[in-house]
Length: 330
Image 1 (cartoon, rainbow, N blue to C red):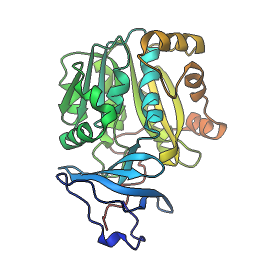
Image 2 (cartoon, rainbow, N blue to C red):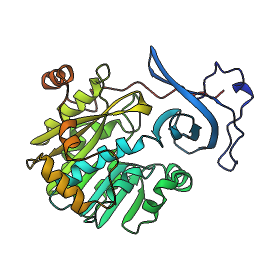
Image 3 (cartoon, rainbow, N blue to C red):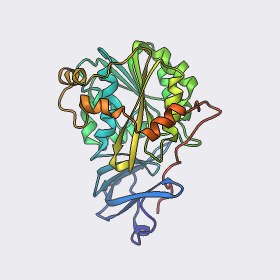
């Protein structure tokens, strides 16, 4: 949201989806990360705004991070650093697979996860399932960096609950990527972080040597509670599990991912660099073999907590990240 403390803000109106960009206003975006913690940065103007059946959608022009996409007042990604998140989300799994051809993406409506997936020359089919058609159409129209991906004939988009969309597929996949919203109390994606979904929804839809990767929320030294819980839950379903992290400046924190398979992984710097050269179109901006391997080295505090974690996420016993950003608009 834009800070209610800004004196000019009460006069500022949020444009509808049919509106043109509002004039330069130079105010502040503010998000409540925890009950006692807020994060804010300067905004030049609101570029576009719309409301779907499920959520408010806003695209800001920010001073520090460029274009920033918000859903229900919570930052999803920012132009200047989203490549860190999406390269980390996609490429380790695809590079660790011997020859990935088919990928299913749960969520990912902004198109960035599909964009990174389609950089791999071996890919023949990507299915992206997002519940919110309006978010996908909004991002297709306003996020120019993803327009090529949205137009790629290899990309097939389904508008449905991700669980239903995956179960309805007649085929299995080499890679399944879970790029869903964080688990929030009362949130729509919480059932997609449970042990039962990983067992009954994900695993049956993976090919024999398939790999599953999920975003696992904040993973900073003060914010890893859900990250460690997701890691432990995935460990109860798959034989081989790797957790890794990266710092995302616009999130004011590190993000974590959990990658899993029933076949062992080979984390080798030279082999990963060779696969990047041979398989990936263009240059990766953030990852190389050395960083992929190094990102799996978790600091002692969090690693100890992960090793000692006993909580398994179920429908009846979940853990949540702090709820939506401040929802009311000035």
